[in-house]
Structure formats: structure tokens, C-alpha cells
Amino acid sequence: AIITHPSQKPHFRFSSLETSALLLVFSARASPSDEQARYFHTTMEESGGFSGPAGTHTPSGAGTIKRIRLENFMCHSNLQIELGPRVNFITGQNGSGKSAILTAICVAFGSRAKGTQRASTLKDFIKTGCSHATVEVVIKNEGHDAFKHDIYGNSIILERRINQTGGSMTLKDHRGLCSFTIFNYIR
Image (tube, rainbow, N blue to C red; front, top):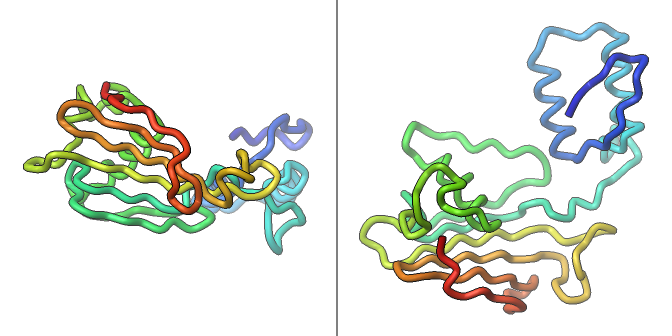
């Protein structure tokens, strides 16, 4: 996102994630002048970027990741992370698997192994000594931006299973019932 001079109006909307990230970046720098702070606050309200008590606009949040589950993926045997509605920080020592979580999200959304710059084929993501890996991402599906809410409900589950010879990518509703699967999807 770009913050322009106070005389220029931005031509975009901030998502709640961008709003939170901008607030973090903004607060990490030297203290802004009163004029800069007023402009920032006004711009965020006009763009619909604030939600809750700071403003009147509450975005639907459809498409926000709620949960990530990894099984035998890279260095993770069994990991489940519940994410909050705003900015989430994943911290840890070098080699503890922070980047593996980001890679897993990319893989769940259909990225090729080479596109992650972490492996040449998807089977390379299977934890050493294991026969398969699973990445499951639960996405919020509520509000005016929901995708086929009557079919999927309040959550959409993306599941990517990888084995040595192939794999599958499955789309599930909020109850975990399969609605669409692509088999032998390995690249």
C-alpha cells in the first residue's frame, strides 16, 4: 500500500491485514507530525480500512486464513496453528520451521514446488522417512464477499495431500465434506 501526500487522495482500499501492517510500520518509524497522523487516520477511515471502535467500517474478512494444519510437511510432523483476525507473528529460532509454514500456505493454494524456491518437486516437501504429507488451510467464508456460502458455509477448507507418486488437492465445506478434488496433481 502507498501513502501519498495529504493533497492526493488514494485510489485503493486497505484490507484489515494491510491496515494492521501499515499501523505497525507507521508506529515503528519516528513519531509522525500531528498533520501526518491526522491525514493517516482520515485516509484509513475514508478507504474503509479501519474496523471496530476506531472506525465504522467492518470488512467481511472472507478469504482470511483461520487455521493451518501440517502433517509430515518439511520439518513438521504434526502442527496446527489457529490464527487471529489481524496480524499474526510466527517467531522461533533458526531452523524451527517458520518458513515451512509460509511454504505450506503457498502449496495449499496451488503453488508449484519450484515457485516456492524451496524444492524442485512437491514430493521433496514430504518429511524424511514419511510416505505422505498433508497441508490443510481453513479460510473464513463470511460476509458480503463470501464464496458460494450456501454450499461451503462459514469456512472453506483447502487440503493438499502429497505422496511419492502423486497427490490431490481437495476443496471442502465447513463440515469437512468434500466438494471438489483433483487427483494425481503433482508438480
